[in-house]
Image (cartoon, rainbow, N blue to C red; front, side):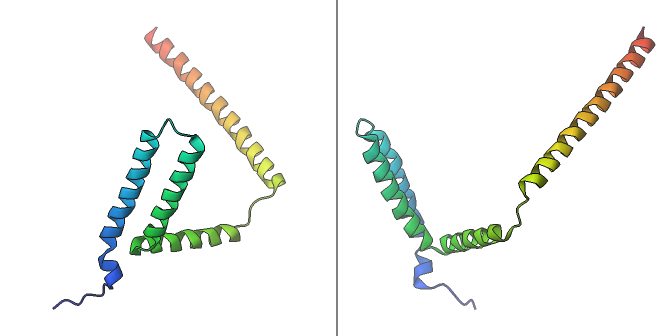
Length: 122
C-alpha cells in the first residue's frame, strides 16, 4: 500500500515545465523570426517572456527548491569575511614569487637532465 503525498499543484509540475519550455522556445523563435524589427522591442519581449517563464518555474517543486537555495547562498555570501586590499596584494605577491622560484627550479632540473641524457647518448 502506497501513500501519495503529492498535492494537486505538484501533480501538474510536468505541465508547468512543458509550458516553460514552450515559452522559452517561442522567445528564441520569435527573436529569430522578427530579426528585422527593433532590437529594443525584441529585448523587451524576451524579458517579458523570461519573467513569465521564471514565474511559472517558481511555482514548481524544483523551482521553489532552487529559489530557496539561491536565497540561502546569497545569505552565506553576505556572511563571508572578504580579505582587505593589503592582504590580497601580499598573497598575490607571495604566489607570484613562488611560481617564479618553482619555474626556475624546474628549468634547472630540465636543463640538468637534458645535459645528462646528451652525455649518455653522445
